[in-house]
Length: 275
Image (tube, rainbow, N blue to C red):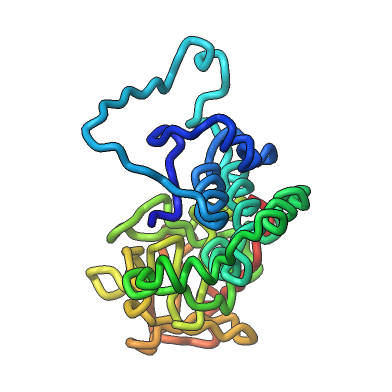
């Protein structure tokens, strides 16, 4: 029942592949095509047949590929653009959950998808709600749908050029303070209605010393610890009652007693609309 079918793992009849409209020509290089072809197949009553005990070989990098751009050089925006096209065509009202997790993609110009939507209409394709309720009904039990975002973007020291940066750290790594670059990535965070400050699937919380700030993997019920008072330019850590503080000299981010006169405890959260 997997929603994504890797193209290298299955064979498809040539005529049926054309009947499905091939891959979306607007998808760039790779990323998202596995979801798109899976939705076309699943929502239009296609079938996948499994043949046991068959051997398979995979050719990944042939000589012609050597002259082409390597996958490692694909910009994140190109991959995300593919996902946005697929989401806009197939996810219906569930696309809001995608944008809750990747809010920076809202401004991506994903191009013309009218022919893809026409395919859905012409083939009487089922809805994404049907898929979630009839096929993947237990997915939210294991992977709860994300709460809505209250704020998202860079966390910038108020009226400075310093931003909180995860430095690519995960699962216990400390965040730091670095020059704002407005490119998202390690400087893109979101504060949701569950009071979680997140970056991808990581939450901000106290480090082992009780003062530093680290990122760690979290589910919907963990690390509901943050409040942002926009007019006060203040982030409060609810369990301790302390405020988010920083040292621009040491490039450190930490918790300390709240002091309304302390400029280093003032922050602003600004949207980043380009990736």
